[in-house]
Image (cartoon, rainbow, N blue to C red; front, side, top):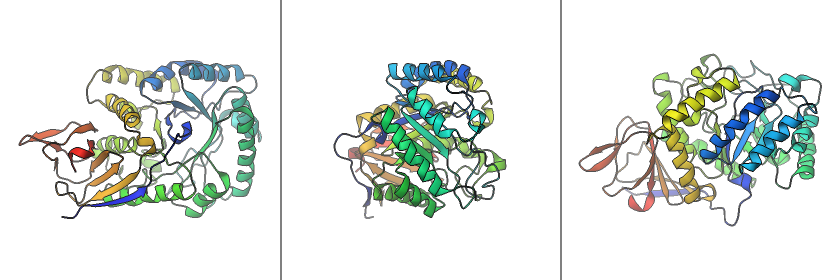
Length: 407
């Protein structure tokens, strides 16, 4: 069998701006008030313990300028811990793809609803010490006719000016769907968002071909416009059956294997070059159906799971912490990425890719994969087996391997 290595993303040489390699922890609640922000100070130590360097929140219930002191206190607390703070000012709360696209089109919530004051709120957030502004999920004009891309670009030009006024290396971020390529390209060409996140990993099917195509396309588009790759697995609505944006063939459709697949994709996500966003609770594998509506209750539940998993080898929390450490040690954020096929010990239907000196294997097959005799496993999304003195990777599992030991 001939082994083929296909390079799809080149190495990033030289020092990188922080936002090109950020690990962002996203507080999912769209409605945080001043009292909630005070409670969120307790989240910051947890974020730091994960190896993440940035936190994202949406303080839509904070009135400005009246509540600016709470924002400033949060920014100061984050900066004291070596974290950066991104604040969201808008964003769709429902799906943008599939049969339910456009059924829930709320863009603004809480205090954001009061007039056309989003730019004013963004400036207040930056003045309070925020390191960037996020627009959340942008509804494409193909779905929402009231989305005016030209007007949005004008607003983003103003936001770029505000960023330059308040911080030397601030960022603008947003979510868009790759299922609407013309709109996707408009954001790349006209808006120059630092973090333009797409849904490549949300829309994949559970097979190596789909993952390869989606990741290759996303990397190619970002590289084409000189933008850093930026990754996330799921927006908050995706696992709600009533708003499932898939076509029945997406990776999350079968509920019986959803959790294992989510953990496997999360391990894949953390190996990818560029920046990575992780939702609060995903680090402890908290199912969406168990997430309370109250941000404080979510925090308490995450803390409860973290206390149980913290000292447990191989737990979801321990795996995320180890992944972020390896990511830094192996400089994966700036690494080249190549897909590998034809390894004589690996089934063709499994996904294998080389990220610098780490071979990432996602076993998308129904059968276990037997690793070479001297394979060094760096990380695994699930427990591994053993047979005839060799390590066995079960189905629906991602492993990181030292590439030199499996070549």
